[in-house]
Length: 262
Length: 272
Image 1 (cartoon, rainbow over the protein chains, first blue to last red):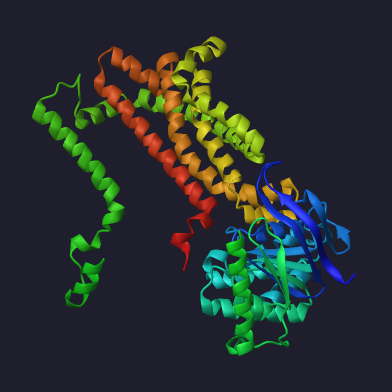
Image 2: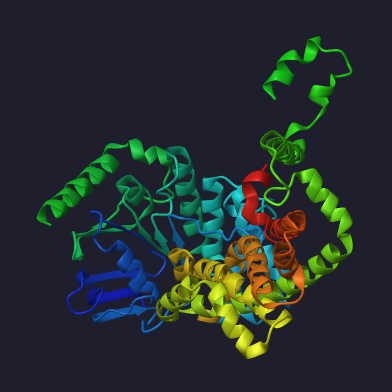
């Protein structure tokens, strides 16, 4: 019960028997309600991890268990957000956010009858991320940061138990990124959702996560696990404290080592 | 633009004629007039006989003189072209969706399509004549065969280039193939589809006129080939002019339709 995600000794190989081994012997656990971050050198199989947990890929060996069930097909209890916001340009922002509800089995049949309730929920989410009143705009009328906020709303609209984020802030400028860190921090606090954040940004990982997994170069596996000791709620000021920087420094050293080992 | 802004304060209220004309809007008409003028002058300067290159004034004379046959044959050509084009739209959309549906269908049918498209359609006209006789049917079918390829390719491309992230987000939510096609693939391929209509309609004219020239007793193609055999060169040019007018009109209609249906894809001009 305590682990929402549990990955045990998983191997994942692309492209048949002699294809590339993306992850090997991958083992990790994420508790319910926890915010965890995955960092590592590029090409360490972080995106593979995303696809394994969401059920888009089924591993050749090992077991992935999400919410007490072994993953054998896409699990609809997750929300996903990528670096590319992938908003559909022919839908308004609000319609984009409502899109998952047209798909998820549990909601799609009651969407039409309960439209008002869902629209209210979407508008509520928009307000939380600071996009009040832009629902009727088209995504291409929004800035990159605003699109990414809307993307987070879309990932959360169907009340997923697990939110998988694949470098969602990678393409944003530094100030917008810090703003969105606070948005995601507050969302996590308010909604009690479990979050797995895949990132290259070590400060982002330390600032946001309760637990950090460091992965090795390909084939990826977890080489180190850290618990982040800083108390919540965390303030952006935290990033200028010595303990914070020490932790970033330690992580940096570990990843440098993992790169050399490759 | 910058000129007007800089000189604006010193100008009197009524701007001179040169500035009141919207040159961008006037450009198509001015260029067309210039083309005809150069043509007319060239014919005059080289003293071309009308049986080789008639002057535009002579061509317009022929338009007036043969107005009734030109009008009737234009309607016939427009009819065969539009009918062939509409069949191409339906078939092209259907086949495009089918091809774009899965990677293996795409891989299997694409080379066939390329091979088919490489065949000159004029070579098919004799076969169509064997099957359907001369007249309207081969013209419609040639217009269809020549114009449906760009539609298929464009629709299939639109479907095949869905961003993998979008597909992942939806599949992780339990979306079926049909869901992804309906919610993302088909709306996404619409700008490609409407864009391809502009290419397809001009090709359809090529197909119908080629077929009419070889195997029909009606249509502009037939009219031009019989005019040619009587050395009535001005009438041949009048037929070409009629075709150009029909082509421009249909193209404009398709462009308008494209803008109307997929305004979101032309966002650079609409964004505030």
